[in-house]
Image (tube, rainbow, N blue to C red):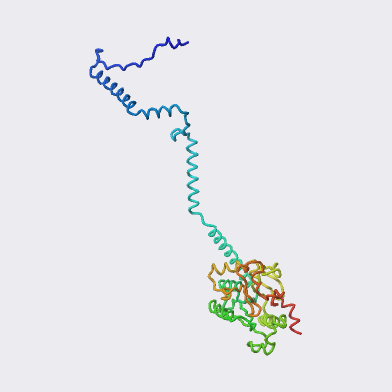
Amino acid sequence: KLPSRSLRRPLTRSRPHASRDRKGREDPSAAAAMSSTSCLSSAGAASRASSFPGQQRQRQRKESSSPVLASPSPSRRSPQSHCRHAQLRQQRASAFRLRATSPSIEMLNETSKEARVRALTDQLKADLLRTKAHFQRPIFTTAMIAGDVVILDALHSCGLLGDGPGAVPVVFMDTLHLFNETLEFLEDCEQRYNFKALRFLPDGCEDRKAWNAKYSSDLYMTDIEKYDLHAKVEPLNRALTELEVDAWINGRRRDHGHDRAMLDVFEDGKQAKVNVLAHWTFRDCWDYLEINKVPYHPLHDEGYPSIGDLQSTLPVAKDKWFEYAGERSGRWSGNSKTECGIHTFESKTSELKQ
């Protein structure tokens, strides 16, 4: 048990012993030096206390205030803490680099579009080559619209255009009522791809004057079905017969409308129909033309998504082009027709004979 406070001996700081020599005598010089150092320390402390009273009071207030818990210095962190902080710094650096180098949404969409077009193009070329290998006398009919130009370009890439024995004949039905731009664009494509289209005109008509003399100039207005029979169905039927066609390559697609919504690539019949773009969309056709920089019909730039005869083709607002059946929405405006008859010619043959 400790004695009471009054009985405790006051603690006094022991004065450092002066250096002594071997005989136990004090070294006067060392004692003098220690005395001088002690005096200087006391004088300096007194001077600081008297010279900066404000700082002393401020220090006292800080010491008397409640202590603030400070975060441990890096030197006092545990190894686990160091590891965690290093991981956080690495994650922040990785996130910054990702933001700096990651592509934009537009770039991602463009990459996806190009990949889709490549896949569709590979399938298109495979179907064209497969058609040529499995059939003896295939043909391709064209109206020079966007989808048909895609097929022309693919046929050329496959080496299936030209005058050689392995070429696929290109058949063009000239109704004598086409846009001049269509005929001019056909000639441009013939030069670009080095082929010559086989043109089939209405029977007994070499020009528009002969047509008017035989069928009248307003047949389209008075009897549209009869017009289609003589201007389109009969010339196609004649081409299929004269060329002894066993496979007919065309540009029909499922997104053309409900009449074509269930198309397969290959359809059986007297002449097999090869719908090589059946699973494409109108947007896909334009993506192909844009990516491969393929020239297209000039009337597309005038607002025509699909182009047929002068009297049955109207421009369509661009925001409706890529809707379902939007491409053909400008054809036969105000009429319930959705087909001109060339793809249903079997049912029309008996009418031609009447």
